[in-house]
Image 1 (cartoon, rainbow, N blue to C red):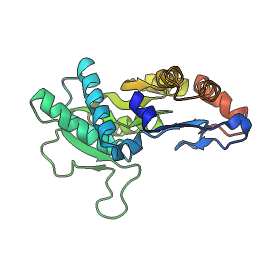
Image 2: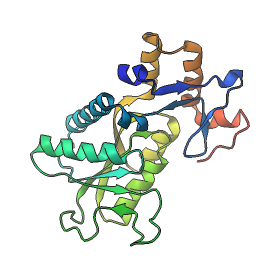
Image 3: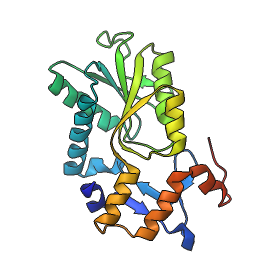
Image 4: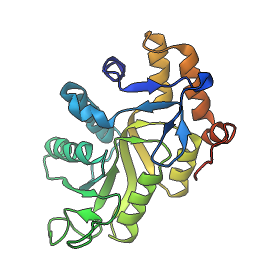
Length: 227
């Protein structure tokens, strides 16, 4: 947590004083953003995140994972390195592929990249979907459902470095029987930032208000909320 704050990965805007909120990939808005994706440019931070995520996966007993699917774009590199780290720790190969946000135009029009004509990746293999962070869990859920329904893989778990822990995501993951494994939760990260003097309590409280009910936060400010 210290390194996320130290390397200025956390940004909070003072929406109450007129600053524009962030627009997330869901088109919903919020006062804060954690640039976990940008950690790839800070090698000590990125490597620590992957080591901690590897530890989390092992501590949670996922020793039967055969395939890691990195969700583009933010989960692609964490997923690749996680598969490598798990292979070292398990003493066997954990395979890897990445899933695009949309089907490739041209070529074979694939959504998954890495499994075409690949006999090493078996039908029905135990699969872990990986993101860099999970906010509303839409991408995570869509990725899991695709691997289950279109690729006939066994997917009960997903993983990320940072989980926003907002109620929309928690409900969505539960509805689709997805267990999410993460290194740190956003509420914990915010509390740490205040305690260590990295962040102003008033700004952090705006972020906490969003986390308590993102739908109300958006609609009370005149923004459409996207389920």
